[in-house]
Length: 424
Ligand code: IMP
Image 1: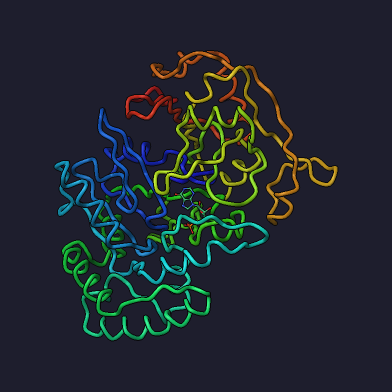
Image 2: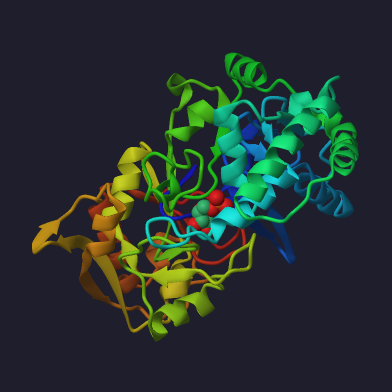
């Protein structure tokens, strides 16, 4: 399941809904920058690392090698679930290959985030994601979950802290890193998490050989993909569909179906171009109606109209077979709605998503305006019950993105979901 915009497409709700049909749910990229919200009755669960399948007993949840893991945040998530009688000991496993986010990654994120890249700050979540992935690819200063309990861990910390302290000073940071405190803290985490840490690549391949079904839960959205997104205003992992195999270790031949998830409008947090952004009262209205404030950082999300050029691009990139359109209820109070059907760039109409961020910054969206439906849709459970204006809107989205709409979400609860095939 892949987000097709800039993240926050409400994937957590869908994953939770669909997990009963799967044996495994796998997180394979990103880290605590993700915030997946699942609402069940009067309970709201906010998950950062743990796959949203954890709320369905009987489903095995895997944190795969491509995830960068902050053990303190993960333990908080586990404690939060345990306090609500959701035990993870039997159905959560963490790859020993997953890289660990350390205090120096957080410090580096803090000191570099303020700097402008391409004239604007990236506005990261400050969770140390970029610095941790940087160390993973550079290799010399990286530590994985499987290293935490091995001999030599203390010596590694000493060596890395010395280098990081110099690097931080070079960046103008005055933060100091305490070897003993970091060693004690992370040894404690290692001891507590050890029963859950294991080899997961073979585990998943064995599960597939045994005929088990797997659901891959993407974090962030495809437009934030490090290789194919709006670089440099992206996250540091492959958050589009292309990341599933690399992050999990499951080869492409096993991927049978890709569900793309998009909001009925668009949001973005952090810096970077956003062609359909609304800086006016309509944008504020969408923010208020959709409660568009970050799960992880609490930041107000930038809001705008649905961008069919962008979503058509990410749909193709991720190999999406069908769409889930989320938060349709949020648009229900607007007198008219717009869809961006193409861009204008240098006097020409273009229908492809530009590869360079400076071109994306310069495009002007070309809109189609449709009448709003101004009807509460939150209690509707079938496509046929939706007002004709809402159906027309969805049909146009499907036509422009060139994929069928399989699911429409009309509210945060599990029950507020419409399946095109009539399933419930
Ligand atoms: P980072 O992933 O913390 O390095 O942040 C890089 C960019 O990705 C920033 O613009 C963040 O706001 C954005 N980002 C990271 N994670 C999420 C997410 O889960 N939802 C939406 N945006 C995200």
